[in-house]
Image (cartoon, rainbow, N blue to C red; front, top):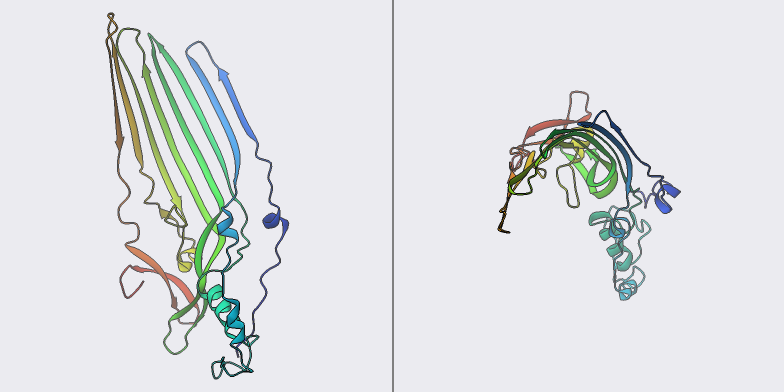
Length: 287
């Protein structure tokens, strides 16, 4: 039987009036004139755009005049006479909000914590080295997914609901930065900065991210394709005693991981009749 609109979960102050204390802590220790150690910790909060929380439709009010009583609007047979819908305005509204996007999505702000530690060494003669490993984890990231409603008993295929935004996103960054400086008043000076970053997330997009509901159910993390593992920048500067100056900057980027998306998760019915997430090749049939 078809049931009318079901109210969502109660909305708390973490959505209507979110807040957080975001501390920043930094420590440094100078071992001697050549070596310094540093450490920092931070807790961050990122408020999502208002368009991700609330978005409304402009439906013509005149559609209310097309109703059951005057014969303009006829309910679908077999779905109950009313189902809380008695005119075309209400039908358009429920079609849009259930199949396109919900006008109000109660999502919380995105949050993250980060740590980094540095060793800085002065070799003398204007030569310095810094090595900084870091770690960052983001939680409550807003992602879009279509939830599994039920599995068709005849075909065995899963039936999904409309796209829905939730705080199901998680990302994790681990990496290290290396910086070397060689400074001269005259002659050649140089600097080199190299970063290695290894980022995983349970979604694989950085702009209005979405994720397959089966991948979420499998707790799968993607080696994301939108962050280059290695980036570097080299700077060369030459100064003469006569005021002549030459500078060059050389950036480098390793490119992005290949192969993300070659496989996709989908729900399949096991021997007990339960839909479980399974990793399969990403083809037109499977996706």
